[in-house]
Length: 254
Image (cartoon, rainbow, N blue to C red; front, side, top):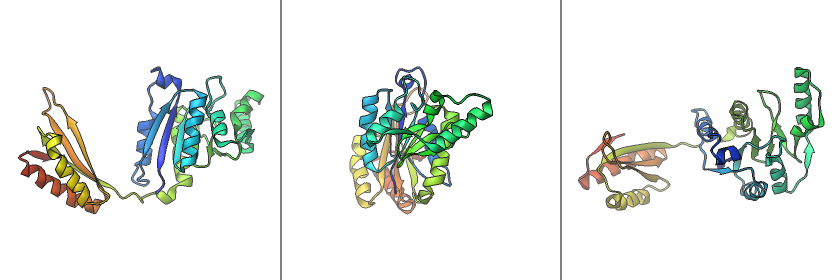
């Protein structure tokens, strides 16, 4: 299975002027019943070209599939295209497919094609364009890195197009289930041996523990669960239930 990640770029997010919506939506796009995918990591970055180059150089070498949101315009605070080219060690060039889309868009709007507008189609050499159904100004793919606009109404359908066009082979391959219980007034320290034993007995399964401190309306509790292959999850959650009961805790199935 490929590993998928996300990079969300923009000073407006880092400074609190805008709230990011891409991360939550990308999780939803990945997790549709047809796709059954998940993100392994995500990173937020400001519009700082040296840091963008550093991060992209590392992720390009990793082999991960990466979705990058933001910074592909042509204003002075947009650095993503240039950073991607520097990270890959290739020059920027006007992509012929991007030029065609931009010219078509300008014709639709009855506007002149200017060098500044064509600059929107200047991408790292060897890139492929990502069609933009909103206004035809494309994003671009460089290997398995996919660079999308910061505008959700553009980038989200573009991300879906990328997945459906290039990664269908991964669809449905991640067969994963999850089950958990709410352990009332539970203490993680007293359940650690149980958690480690379950992970040791069920290879590849992950045990998770999510404490809630409680409030006037909610009793303190721990959501204790397992995640992994469906067959193992069914067995492991029963082991957890028996172990929690043996420790003297009450619990409810979530």
